[in-house]
Image (spheres, rainbow, N blue to C red):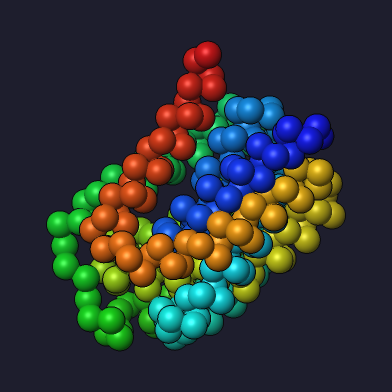
Length: 254
């Protein structure tokens, strides 16, 4: 790892984590394409390395969200309970993906999420403290398993599950969804990180500058979130998903 590469990863970490903390995705959806395209790492190493940065990012952002009272703890605790075994399963499953299959699957998930959040703009959010079907503990635990699985599988945090579930289906306020997702990832990602690390799926020289950038960007994101309206936040989320998917697709055409 050259000093220039380390500096580039630090800058990427700052930008990815700052934007990721705005949408509850931890910035991993930016880091994965960078690691796959610019550094050519394997899917398992990309997921493991990204998940370490996501943990640093979301942990920092969660402090700000808890201070602002945005985290829905009634949702967060059942989700976190189910996410622990899901995190282990996801870290083991990613090793079975070929590079092309990983990129295709990841790109399809991102495009699907972009479509969902765009459709979400036409519906009204529920009241801030209104209960939804997602507040039923059994549903929360089951969804938590999916959150942990996809978080470790793609190294992007749990937003890939909570966004369609909470933002679209349950029509919860976007800022509550992002804050609650960040809390759940912070509580459960260490299990996925440990599983990836034991399997040798973490590029530590690349992880250090990403973590430093993630801490910086994660502390800035919540401050920006306070000044962005919910419709604009949803638009930013959709654009980010499509951009990341296009970047992965171009990798196989160029």
